[in-house]
Image 1 (cartoon, rainbow, N blue to C red):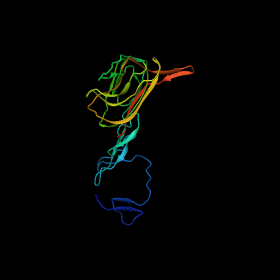
Image 2 (cartoon, rainbow, N blue to C red):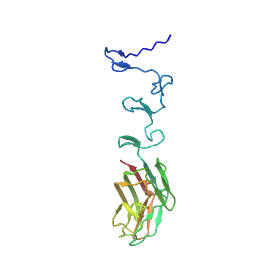
Image 3 (tube, rainbow, N blue to C red):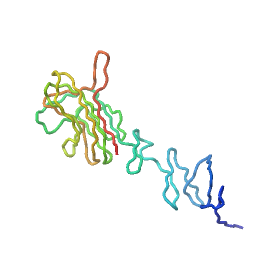
Image 4 (cartoon, helix red, strand yellow):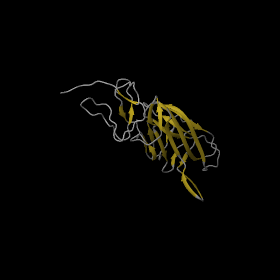
Length: 235
């Protein structure tokens, strides 16, 4: 004999609102299964997943936070979703010397930017003579460039981010070089700009005379890397 009984069960309440209504705390000492049906067990999810509501009348589901299991970086919220922000941080591995060009309209890609500290979406490439990168999504990105230059006095170096697709600067800083010829001066660019996934970008520099970008700051008490560039998504 088979008897089906349809009723609502209340624990701690005389007026249950659902098939099982617990008015109090609930302790689960093993897995929590969601979904399934009368003949199939629900899913216990995977390690690191979180439980997401799918709205009234629909079973919740286990979801993986975007980027968290495989990426290294800062977690940000974009349009209500968590994701790991794209980050690129690169240092030079050797000095880079380029030819100056008074009045040049196209800057030189910076070479020897190939010590990748972080490139969590594998969208950066650097060699001894050039570099390029892409962003994985349209958004606003923070730019940081710290570049030490050796060149001739009274020249006008420029450093920044170049859009290879459109052939123009999208962020840059320039100044008059005031130091003995062959001396050192440090240029810093800190800004935030919109960037597009459809474009390819590069870190570039130009000067009115020949110049050398230094990879180490060296003194009598030691030395360390000085030229470093980075891009990080903000939103």
